[in-house]
Length: 359
Image (cartoon, rainbow, N blue to C red; front, side):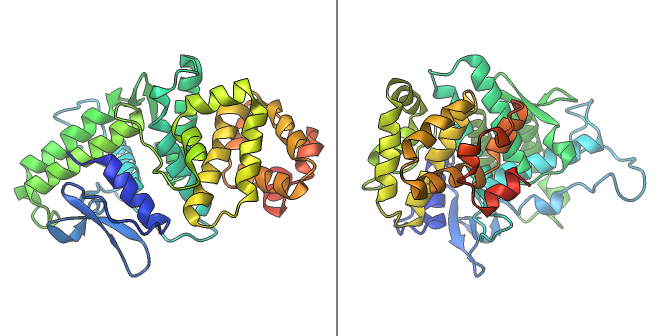
């Protein structure tokens, strides 16, 4: 079975130019393309990618053209499925597989790329946390899965079509588990590959490799697989421990929040000398937003009070949290929090944060 941990390490190595040797993967390997994107290719099929194989098989959009009169290809497995549902399942399938793609970043996609990958990583951790109760975990699952889809981005219909039931992602209208649908989907093309010779270039065994990887990505997303871990780097040991073990982070903050603020202070006084270090700092600050401020927003005033004598650091921290993502925007909206009531915070906002939260 494909190894998501190896894939994840290779993904980070390429995305952040870490310069490490590639970790061997079963069936697939990364290649960097001319536009500096990176795709997961079949090891034995150098012209076909994991993400693109199903694009030629995308069902026609039933909202365009003549009224739909066909049936979904899996209608014999799922009698409650219609062609509109089939389209939504396709979009979610593609969204999950596209977590393997590395795209060139520009001002219009950087935030979405950051949010989608952050949500994937955090969803993989939630099942292992003990310092959050089940209600808090469920709230975070819904929050993170919403943004995982939103940041892809998907259309509005797809955005609200699925939800977590316990530890499975389920299509609300049909009550079909996504894992079951994707398993049958790959089995169908495995068994009927000879009927799709004009649009399907993969051999049946390669379709099977796609099935294994897609389901492993889904199980990671659902928290049913081994949790992911950001790889180690010299000088980041304590930061990475907080990122990779949220229970440790929550315990540290509960017992001695000043120690957490001091750790932030020390890291920011050092030069964030490479993209991976910057990414880890951004992740830690988003963890503070998601796991602390999401439940106790007024804790932010303690952070501002600690850093108020160093306005440059305080401004950097606040704008990373508020403008790297729009997580806090949704958190405040859900809790009916008006940021204008916190002038000691907004005084540090840069132009981007003002645009998002004050305009």
